[in-house]
Image (cartoon, rainbow, N blue to C red; front, side):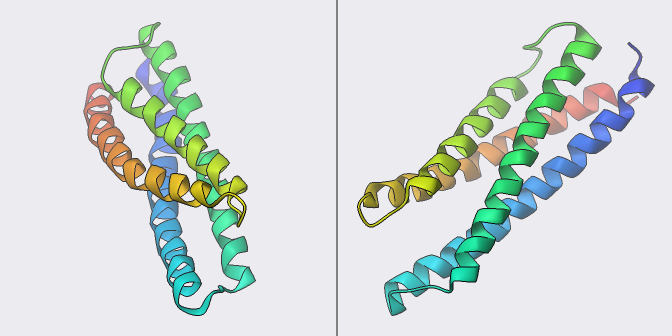
Length: 145
């Protein structure tokens, strides 16, 4: 397939990545706020937790969309996968996002370790997002004329 037929796919990927990074930032701010309120006042507003869940769900959807776009686009352009380290960085990011989301749904007073798994995974996710962004830039350069 020729490149112009895939240009719309790369535009969706670019927006999805930008929105994923923005969602990650918002999740960091809202999560930090909840953590602060939990440790100083023993509570946080219920709407903040709901907002955190909604933004997290949106980020999961965006990251899964990026996975599908990357797989379809690479297979359509090259006919196979594994042409750069972007695949490994992307898969790592997807796995970390899914671990974080799963841990978030398990956080409770009975399972305090899930909170630390969620927070720790999100710290590692920062590095993973940086890797996928850098390797993605190399991939974009291959597709642009």
